[in-house]
Image (tube, rainbow, N blue to C red; front, side, top):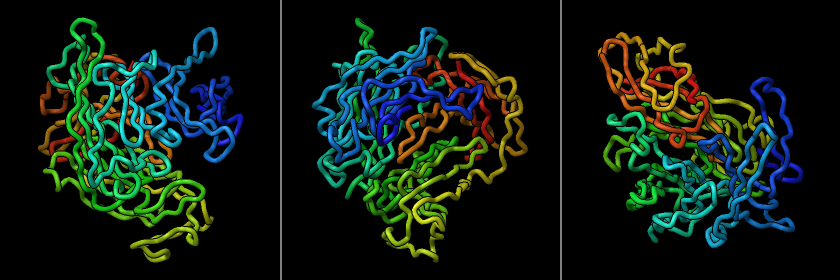
Length: 447
């Protein structure tokens, strides 16, 4: 993809092929230069590349892109289509940098900036007329005027999409709602997470998607945080890692690191869902990433602008609580975070070869072994990690419906009904027990 600060990297498209992952091949140029855009895969295999700015902030010609491009590879070569979104929406944002972008189960694209979001048809760029604009964030302690995209980088994503056990082959929209969450941001917004339910339906006559919304739910976090990563665990919890308790991203950005991991457990009562876990000794600020690994751990990588002489330490002391990088600004060490549930007695997926490839709507068996008395209560598919700058554009977790569970070592589940739920790709399959323990992941190809 294109994500360079200067030409030609601002507009070039480069592809990595499975036949030789060491080679990066030039695949043409986009119609617009894009500094810090977002990108997702669409159900039909095209890539949607959204937003970003025409140059780096402060340079001549700077403008936020009020459009997106659809890239596809065909037997006739590479193809680019340009679609436009309302400038009135984009103009409320400074640079439209790394806007939140995800695919809804209807096949529409959900875009969220700093204060509000829109739902567009990715084939046309048109905002849906029935519920296509999110309700405003309350003018309260969470402050609707705070920046939540880069450079204040609040992680945002859909919560795991739970497919109902009543789902049948051929169901178009078995999931009636999804939930969006954005965590942290600028100023006072650093202390809070905001959740919004998006109810999805289809017009009975036109069959066009329609939307309604719940109310914004605001929860206080254990402390202020931005520039961090939020990673879904197979058992329904998620973990915050990396980032800062003050400051912002960028070459001129200064920050105060936050090295403690936080757990969020949505099954608990509001006000009791956050828990502070272990602390790393490595600070990870600008350009950090974190990803769920196949063995169930979380890998934490990268960071720069880490020079101890430039960082503002609040609550932590360099050399005491934090081992600063010996390279100055860059950080080359890697952390591996193991959640407490990871240490429990694990189930093991036994029939990996049987489930290596699954099709949409397929009912399939997962054989597993486990020496305890707990049963499998959750089966999840996790999309691969595409993370940068506090944004994992591809983070997507689906909870598959359990059709049968013989509690003796076989669980029968159903794959997602179509590609709007999960575009064709490789996913990690996990099983979780009633006590929160989860297996190692198994790669499966969904097609």
